Image 1 (cartoon, rainbow, N blue to C red):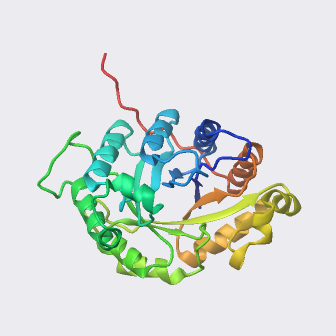
Image 2 (spheres, rainbow, N blue to C red):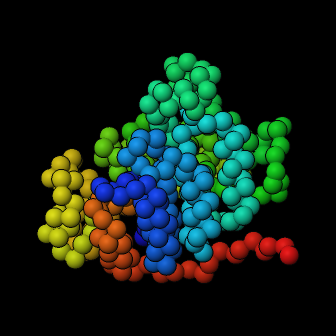
Image 3 (cartoon, rainbow, N blue to C red):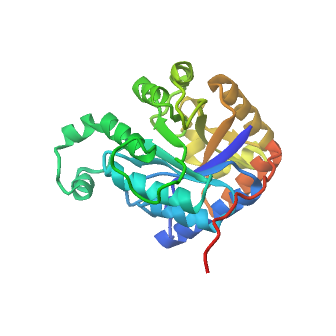
Length: 308
């Protein structure tokens, strides 16, 4: 089993945004040292989160780590130009080869934020309706299938990920375009529904840049030395564990639940969104999980040589 981290960069009570940003940087470095597979950021525009530019944050994290994959899960394509996203991620892939993931998601923001980001260029219903076309446009641009070209040319296409929860349409879009698929059990709206990932796996169509399906499932929870401590730290999250989806317990309990989810969803990789109330319990959570899963640290990815 492979394990990565999903980080929302929340602002803790009594902390300033830059403190949370630095906590995220330290967590990515710890994940790198623990042998975790990838570190994914999310795009949120609410003031509860410390940053609203995950592509810029991803580049910073890639520069602060040695070999872990860094990505965004995902860029909200309703709010961004596909060309701008393609240019940003091709540049990151050229600087950190083999370490960048480009995820796409259909989420939104408050209407005022949408208007500001889109410069009032399009009515909201039209923006929502064109989301699949924006995904296809980005795929064409980043894979070099568009007549529009942009530098740095010669850069391999970073892995493309579609992120979804309950929608079969999203799973099919990922499958039919030969992309990876990330399924979330970590969001408040998440439901336990393996039929979505089964649809993706069964309808996957190989692409030149993606001959095999790639599937990651996002989970949420908290690991501590004992189940009692994990539940105490998780607080209200443990009390309101809707549908029992959160993994809250000691290392052995968390590993058992992870193995069940991997089997149920036919995947070998999870990303973990922790419910830790502070930085110390957060680091301890991931150290316990890495030890229980016996994660190993592969050799660092090659760095780009800098000219004199």
